[in-house]
Amino acid sequence: MCGVFGIKPHPEAANLAYLGLYALQHRGQESAGIACLGPDRIRVVRRMGLVADAFSEESLQQISGSAAIGHVRYSTSGGSMLENAQPILITCHHGQITLAHNGNLVNAQRIRQELESKGSIFASNSDSEVILHLIARSQKTKIEDAIVEALQQVEGAFSCVFLTKDKLIGVRDPHGFRPLLMGSLGEAKLFASESCAFDLIDAQIQREVDPGEMVIVNKLGMSRSVHPFPKKVARQCIFEHIYFGRPDGTMFGESTHEFRERLGEKLALESAVHADLVIPVPDSGVCAALGYARASGIPFAFGLIRNHYVGRTFIEPKQSIRHFGVKIKLNPVRELIYGKRVVLIDDSLVRGTTSRKIVKMVRAAGAAEVHLRISAPPTTHPCYYGIDTPTRRELIASSHSVEEIRKYIEADSLAYITQEGMMSCLKKSKPEDYCHACFSGDYAIPFPGSTEV
Ligand code: AMP
Image (cartoon, rainbow, N blue to C red; front, side, top):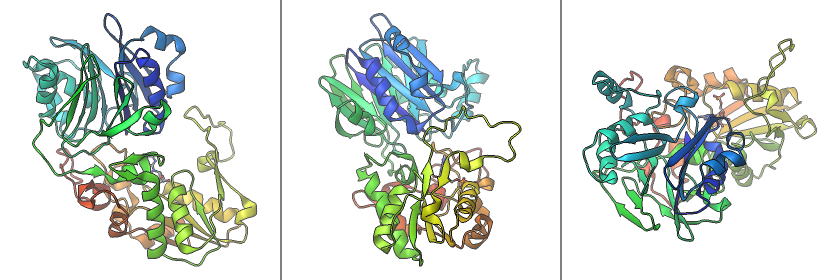
């Protein structure tokens, strides 16, 4: 769960990277960083927190230059601390190299142990640092060859951007788990996790970096593409479409908003219920709720209002009578809900704790019945490729039936979209090109240390 950005050459590279990360903020809120190539060297600014708080005009001025990469992080491997923030910058016999990585490597721990036993020193506990160690050890003369040699040794998900003195490089793992787009702005070439980063700065979307492709951008902004990895079946993450990606973009060739609407329509056909109102759990359930309302003919209403300003800095008074829980984020519109049979739509049910609180809240607002519909199948397996899911034991659907979950969340009825129903909502991309391990347990690459697979 991270967002990456890259641009070269552009006189305002650092400022544009800042804006790009601003648009990608939903992909990670723990830390943000920008590395920029100045006249003499690459400099990096990394801070904990949101993009808007992490950089000042002054700090961007200090690193300004002609090429930049950026990263927003939500940790899936390694703790939430500044040492693990990216871009990571190293200096080795290839010169300065900086990396922003989205995805999760499944064999990083083993490689790290091997390297440490031979004397390597690590500055963080993030899996991404392993890649830079392997590059530093490569005897290849060209940096792109050293990067390929390093990436051939790691397994798992990587959509990466690298910046060196001469080159900007974007690369996606052979399964293509995480997205990576290419774009242009005048002479400059760009990379970003999602198209919203390009929209904000009026850059043109060119295309997706293909699974297993590496694109090398030189000083003049000319790009060259290579396919250095053995071809593998594509395994793009279906959960990016369901929850993670912003709905105002196209990912893996598919409009995220349209896909989510179709999920809602399908869900209405698969699990109809007599009700008076369709209410989304904002923001994640909005698109699917629109589809559900359209297909069912039940009116849509914003019956839950979200406070968009709840940040990580929220402090509960120690003496508070009760825990604020989900109330700090969501509040029901009682006038709409009172006496109504409500269908609540959310995109996913993971632990079940949030849904339980929301069902309770809607009932307390006077709903006559509360039916929950989930526009994803039951989440039964953890993700090892970059989405922050809890361990299998914490996933309620891994050990409970739908009826047991319904009882736990105290809904009048509960239904999930079927796996087949979900896949049938893909219209422009092929179902076989997707990873759905979190719903099916069908892992393209097993996680070596896990007994859960
Ligand atoms: P819960 O069932 O209590 O674990 O929470 C489900 C809610 O969390 C849903 O509203 C989802 O939109 C949201 N959600 C699903 N996956 C994630 C994730 N990886 N990180 C944060 N929130 C998530």
